[in-house]
Structure formats: C-alpha cells, structure tokens
Image 1 (cartoon, one colour):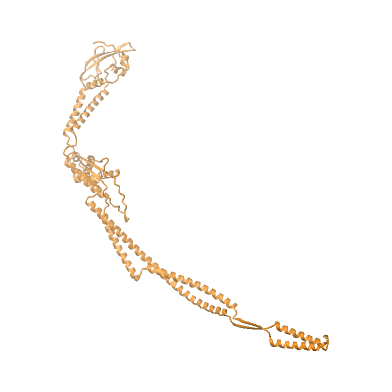
Image 2 (cartoon, rainbow, N blue to C red):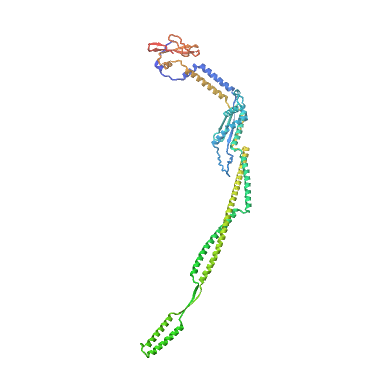
Length: 545
C-alpha cells in the first residue's frame, strides 16, 4: 500500500458538482436504479396493453340569429332590436345550458349510463338516484364543451370505451339540449294564454256593443253629442237674444225717462204768427182833437196874449193830446197766432211707443229666460248622456283594441309554436356525431410517457438515497463534515458483509476492519484510509466516524 501526500488546504477548498460525480452516484446505486426503472416500465407496459381503447365522438352546434321571436308584452307593436353578431355571453349561455343538470340527467337516463357495472357500485350498494348522480358526474367529466374561436360554433366531444355509445350519448345530448333551449326560450302556455284572453275580450266586446245599441235605442237613434251641440248652439243664440233684449230694455227705459223730461219742458202750443199795428181810430180822433185845439189856439192868439189863461189851457190840452198820440204810437196793437206744438206731439207719440216697446221687451225677456233655462237643463242632460255614451264607446274601443291585440299575439304565438314544432331555431346541429372508427388514445405516447416517468422516478429514488446517505468517501467530505485537516488518504478496497455500513467501515492504522450498523447490502467498494493529526496529543489518529 503506497502513501500519498495530500495538501489539506487544497482538500479543504470547495469543489463543484460535475457530471462525473453524477455518473458515480448512478453507478453506485445501479442496482436500485435498475430495479426501480424496470418495475415502473413493466407496470407502464402492462397498463398500456391492458387499458381499453378510448374513442372520441364529436358534434358541433351552430348558434345563429335567423329567427327573432316577438317579445311577450301588452304593447300593440314591439320594436325588435336585431343584432347580426352573436355575443360571447350568448355562446357561454348556450354552453352553460348544455352542462345543466337537466340535460345531463336526461342524457344519462336515455343512454342508461347509470346501469354501468362496477365493483364499487356492487360493493357500496348505491341507490338508483346515487347511481344517476354518479353517472352524471362521469358524463360531465368525459364531456368537453368549448366554443370554436372566431366562430359561432360550439364543439362537444365525448370520450368512451365504446364507439357506438360515444356517438349515441352526443346525439341524445344534442336533442336534450335543443329541447331545453326550446323550453327556456319559449314561455310555457303562451298560445293557450293568448287564446283565452282573445276569447274573453271578444265576449267583452260583444257586451259593450250591445250596451251601445241599447243606449241608441233609448235615445231614439239621436246621438247625444250631436243633440248637445245643436242645443248648445241654440242656447248660445237665445242667450245672445236675451242679452240683446235686456240691452234694449235698458235703452228703452232710458229713452222713456228722457222723453218724459223733454215732455215736461216742451210747450204744448207754439206761436205761429205775430202782428204789431197802431189803433187808427184812436189816433185819428186824437189827431183830429189836436188839430181842433191848434186851430182854437191860433184863434185865441189872435185875440189874447200867450199868457192868457185860455191860451195856456189850450196849450195844455194840445200837450196832453200830443202825449196821448205819442203814447198810442209807442204802444201799437200786437196780434199773435198759435198752433199745436209738433215736437210736443212727437214726444208724446215716441213716449207712448217707447212704453209699448218696453212692455213687449219685458215680455220677451221673460220668455227668453224660460227658454234659456230649458236649454240649459237639456244641455246638462245631453252632456251626461254624452259622457255615458263616451264611456260605453271607450269601453268598446278598449275591448276591441285588446281583442285585436291578443288576436295578433295569438297568431304570433301560433307561428312561434309552428316554428318550434318544425325545429326552426337559433341553434342547429352543424355536425352530427358519427361512430368513431379509430381510438383517440396513442399507445406509443403512453409508453413514451411511462418510460420517461420511470426514468424520472428511478433517478429521483437514487438521488434521494444518496442525499440521505451520511458516508464519507472523499477527503473533501471529511474536511466539510469534521472541519479538521487531512494529512493523507490511502486507497482501500474493502468488502462489506451484511453488517458493515456502506462507506463507513474503514481499515484503521493497523489494518483492522471497522464495524457498524449496515443497511443489509453486501458489495465491494473502493475506499480510503484517512489519518489525521490530533493537536492535543501530537499523534496521528483515525478519526471516529
């Protein structure tokens, strides 16, 4: 056995894990690796060979918008807002409808999937409902429903070990889905409801029209509205006449008062001719007397002086006579001719006429008041009758509108029912399911996957064992674990029995074999004899492991 010098500082330096170390670990546990890999590979091959073939059937559903059902409402006409594109929410709703429990349950019952023989069902003695629920879960897990990208198609795939069953399940599922689509998009009893309502409003319309005919008979065939309009026109005319009569009464009353005032201030007779003349006889006598007196004065002046008493007396008589003449001339005789005053007569005539008119106007006013009161009462009664007739007409019109509405809705419901019967829907089976001829699973792919899995599990087991193995096989392991310098490493080939510890049994300085609790493995392995310097004693010793 040769000694080898070993640099402790170099051995203490950290070393990286290389491919050689990986290969060393694999070859160190090659038996475990071989057993693990072979067992898993054998199990994979048996599984692939014994596993029944799986068949996939496919169908596709097209979601379209070729049919637009009218909205069930009380409106006369419903404006339909039609969009040509199908939204993602609508496609997802149809997918959710396909995955509903009702559709799955109907498919399970129609295909008899709950009657599948299995050991667990026989062992647990499941009830009918439990088997149906379990079959629904299996059906849902084997179904793959997804929307085809950038299209309005829904792809449905079902996997089964029996090809005919796969196609049958998809066919029944598509029919159950279409029935469910009809159920959720069609209100139940829609046609029956509209038929009942149309019949009811037809009876109401007949009753309303009968009431209108009876009302017309009671009114003698005259429409209250027309009679009311005529009565209102007459009432307005008589009201105008009454107002005019009252105005004429007031004017006549004022005229009578004015005529009476004029009559009181107007004279009964008028002077038609006035003549002024002197009294010729008296003046003639006075003038004759004056002439006589003047002659007598002249005669006396021839005899007597002016101052004589007789002369003065004559002068005085002459002055008196002249004064009488002047007085007579200043007061001539006045002759007046009078006649009946025509104004007074006209005032009397007009006053009599005005009083007569006033009496007739009063009588006319009383008659007009009575007529207006009568027409007001008739108008009020006709108004009430017209309101009653309008109520009957409105009721008949409402019943007619409702009858026509529900008649139209009934026809729409009948058309919808016919479309549903003929399966003219917004969904259609774009691709019918067919019985698959070839299995969908690839055995070679399963074998390759099993081989890779066996390799990974085997390597994982080897490295797990290596990780939990605490044996020291290199000087670097000693330095890393014990943190003491290694002076020399001697290669040693040691044979371990069933009681030796793998990698831990070493020869001491004197060549004695080390004993330990082993793992029951017996093989040969290269080892090294390691002596280290004890600083306390100054001697080389084999470190205790």
